[in-house]
Amino acid sequence: MAPFNKDRTDVIVRARDSGVSTIITVGIDLNSSRQAIKLAESYTEVVAAVGFHPHNVTGVDEVDMADLAWIADYPGVVAIGEVGLDFYRGYSPRDTQLQVLDWQLGLAVKLDLPLIIHCRQAEKDMIPLLRDWTSPHKRLKRLPRGVIHCFSGDTDTARQYLGMGFFISFGAYIGYPTSINMHNVIRSIPGDRLMVETDCPFLPPQSRRGKRNEPAYLPLTVELLAKIRQVSPEIIARETTKNVRHLFRLPTIDTDLSSGTFH
Image (cartoon, rainbow, N blue to C red; front, side):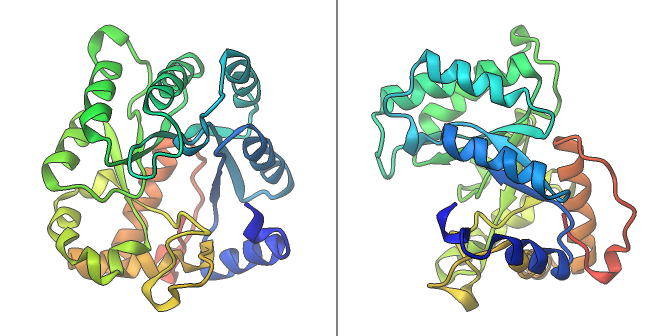
């Protein structure tokens, strides 16, 4: 994204120095998805996800979906995302969001790729849609199916996503004062279904509010999760590393997690 245009290589170096060994960079439309693939080609620690974010689906048609299908078949692509529904901002018509998401769900099945799901104030539509998509008659080959990114719902909503085979991912926003009520939800997620992310350049840690977020800050979120779940940061690092590599079929890297290596 544009906030990284001036120092992208430095950002990646800082991430590596902080213990982040793999970055999944996420597309939100055709152009950014192509850029994500270029980054994956340029940096060994970067892999790509491609897709249309719900904010960016106005005007998307079947020709655009054909283009997305073509670039999604690139070897460096590990997921379809970020895709989903956002009825909070309303930047795109709801019916268009639903149609484009349906197309992308079909693409994920066709290419046997997991999903990175965005859902904001749209659970009433999202949960039935995903329940149908994950139902036995769909015969999805892949298990697990994907990850609910930047989850901010309640325990019951999390339980429904988990029941459909999704992981739950949290970012630095869990340290914001407004997120104090989420702690019980965070503690309820099984360790083998937990993930951690930055959503950079958005949602920086509380100590850096108002500034650009970046991957080097990921260990701060790991520490937050560890404190909330009352375990060591090393346990969170180990669990989330294993989970993300399982979901996105990433090769295992032999590292000493006690030294603070995160993926």
